[in-house]
Image 1 (cartoon, rainbow, N blue to C red):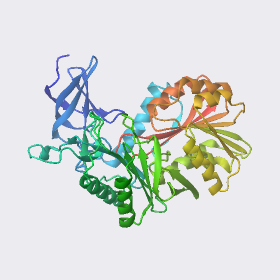
Image 2 (spheres, rainbow, N blue to C red):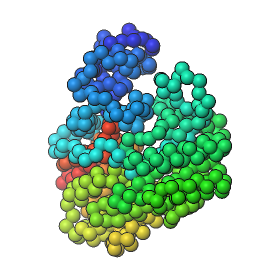
Image 3 (tube, rainbow, N blue to C red):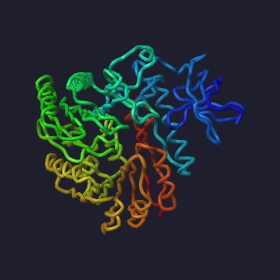
Image 4 (cartoon, rainbow, N blue to C red):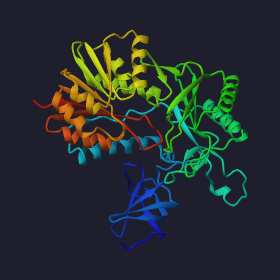
Length: 463
C-alpha cells in the first residue's frame, strides 16, 4: 500500500457499508472511514492498515454531505451506541434497505424475491425500553476534559468507547431512553460515587459496582432497575434500592445480580430481588407480557408490535397448523401466533425465559403452547413432530450449522426467519437455498440512529 498508519489523507466518501462506516478509495485502495456520510469530503487519519484495505477516522469535514446533520447528543462522536445521529433519518432508511438487498444478493445468492421498504419508526429518540450502563475505574476523557486536572478519572458510569474494553464515557443521560431513565442513572451515579465503595475495574478485576441495567414498560410506564455487583453486600444495595423506591414512584422492581466472574457480562450468577416481584409488564398487540430481569425482549416496543404483525402476516396460518418456534425467549412470537394455530412448540435454552413464557401464556389465556428447554441444536435433533411452519429468531451470530441440518430434517412447508443481522441471515439462507426459496423480506427499523436493521424473511419450500 502507498499509505501507512498515521497518514492524513483527503477522501471523498462514496457510500456506506454494513457496519456503519463510509467507504472511499485512494489510489485504488479501499478505505473504511468511521463517522463519515456518503457525499462528504473529509480529511481523515489512517488508523489501521490491512492486506486489502485501510481504516481511517474523520479529522475534519471539508465539504459536508447534503445528508449530514448535527447530532444532538454531546457523546455521539465517541460512543458507539447510535453513531448514525449525524445522518438524516430518511437516508438511514435508504441505506438500511440497501444493506439487506446487497447482503442477500452477495452472501445469500438470492435475487428473485420481493424486498419491501423499511418500516420506519415513529420515534427516533427515547425508543429503547432497555439500557445497560457500565461502571469503570478508567474514565474516557472527552477532548475538552483532557487538558484539565481532574480528580474523578477513576470513576465512570456510562457507555463503552468502541475499540476499548475497559474505558467508559461518563454520561449524564442517553437520548435513546426516556428522560426518567436518565434521572435514575444520575441518582445511581451520585449514590455510588458517594458510597466510598470502589467501582469495578475490567483490568484489575477489583471493585464492587459493575453494571446498571434499566428496563421501561412502554404501556404501563413502569421501570425495573438491576444493580450488578461483584459480590453480595447487603447494606449498600439495600440503601440504594430504598433511595430509588422513595424517589421514583415509577420504579416497581429492583434486583441485584451478583457476578463474581471476570468476564464482562451484566448477567449475574445469582440474583436477589430487592423491590417488587422481579419482573416488569408490557403490552404488544393487546397481549400482556411479563419480563424478568435477564430475559430477552425487543428493545423498541412500538416497533416490536410491527415486527410481530409482519411475522403473523408472513406465517399465513389457517388455524390447523403446528408451529415450531426456535429461540422463542419469553414466548412473544409463540403467543402472537397461538390463536391462529392448533399447536405451538417453543424452544429456548434459558429456563428463566421459558418460565416467563409459561406465565405469559397463563396471563393471556393461551393453552395451546408448550415450551422445550435446551440447546436448540440438541432439542431440534430430538423433535419428532412435522411442523407446517417453523419460526426462527436466532442471536446476531445466526444459526449453528446443526440447527440448519435439523430444519432440513423436518422440512416444514414454510420458514419465517427473524434477524437483527442481515449478514448472518443471508449466510443461513444460502445454506437452505437448495430446499427453500426466499419469497418476501420485510426490513423494520427497530434501531433508529444506528446501522442495525431487523429483517423478516419468508421462505417457501421448493416442490
